[in-house]
Each structure stands twice: as C-alpha cells, then as structure tokens.
Length: 105
Image (cartoon, rainbow, N blue to C red; front, top):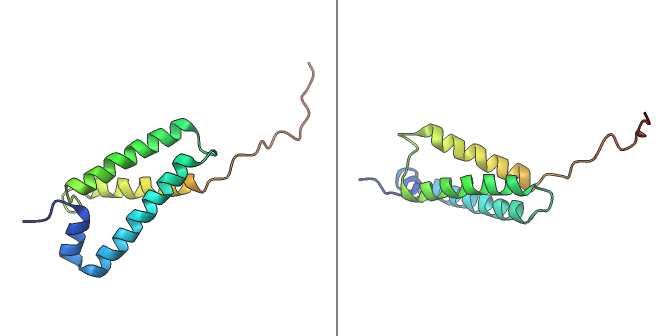
C-alpha cells in the first residue's frame, strides 16, 4: 500500500531530497501563515477565511496522499499557500485620493 500522509508519500516515491525540500516548504508556509495571523495589515475576515482553508488543506495532507487521484485539490492548496505568502508580505493600502480636497456642494 501507500502511506496515508503526503510527506511520507513524497519520501516513499521521491526519496530523501524531495522529502527534505517539501518539509522546508511546509514549515515556511506555516511560518507565513502565523505572520499573516499576527499582521495588523490584513483584515480579520481575510485572516480567518484563508487560515481556515489552509488548516483544512494541511489536515488533508496529513490524512491522504491525493496528488495522483486529485491533482486539482493539490494545486488549490499551492495557490492558497501563495495567497498566504502574499498576504503576509502585503503593505497597507495608501489612500491615493487623500491629496485631493473635498468638493463643497
């Protein structure tokens, strides 16, 4: 049979080097997720939405290797990890209309 864990599946089919890089990738994504949760630049709704989805996908990674039977779910997880990285590094929006005076009607 196959191992029921994405990391063990990668180790079993790819060897130590892909396993090592995927573990580093996962740790970096968790660190970026924590940075996003602690960031004051990211809206609260965005934090909860993205982090709940990330937690569900990470739990699924622990339960079942689905790269072969369901690659779209794996790609969705990678996309979500990119969103987390982008949100963790986001700069606060500047009001570009602030320099204009308000019109009196």
